[in-house]
Length: 50
Image 1: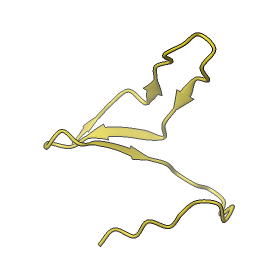
Image 2 (image 1 turned 30 degrees about the horizontal axis):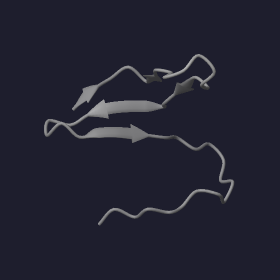
Image 3 (image 1 turned 30 degrees about the vertical axis):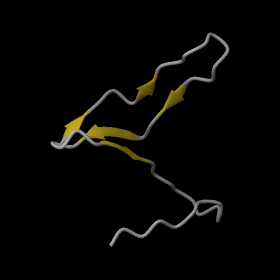
């Protein structure tokens, strides 16, 4: 796995800047975005990976 730059480039000058917690790429070329939650706000869908 390769750790990539976490900044998301803006397409337009008025776009909001974004910064991922962790942005990585697997050996198969898949991009992975890992978001870290420090508090449970009960507003994120639970995606269980089997």
